[in-house]
Length: 163
Image (cartoon, rainbow, N blue to C red):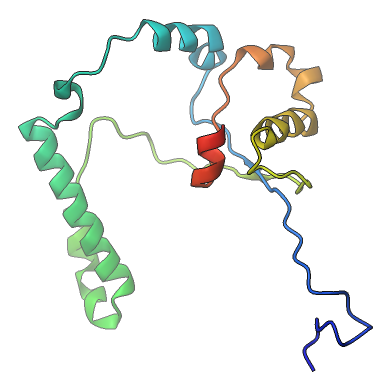
């Protein structure tokens, strides 16, 4: 007999409970003025229309992108391809692509939050999640200007589409 079978009265009927979970992640080296909501909205509204030149890679960007893709594939092969590929680990490290835009090596702390019974797939679900996070972290009391700051939200495709 299956443990969750409807035929066994000691177990509940087959159900699955899903709750919404979130993790707070501090932004690296960010200052309050970097996430000013009014400046963000103004920059968005005043931004010029995108042109094809804005999204098509330059020859140098194409080269950089290709080198990064090749390195990523090689890193996957060396790290997950078994013992025969481990001997290439040091050579691979020597050829890792670099960029002037890289940030310094640092540890990012993660702050898991409790789960909530919120359906984030609903139209208002993401707004409810945002409200609960603000309350859970007591940002509304301890950081009253939180309403004037950009908050970055990630999730699955449906959650992001509805945010």
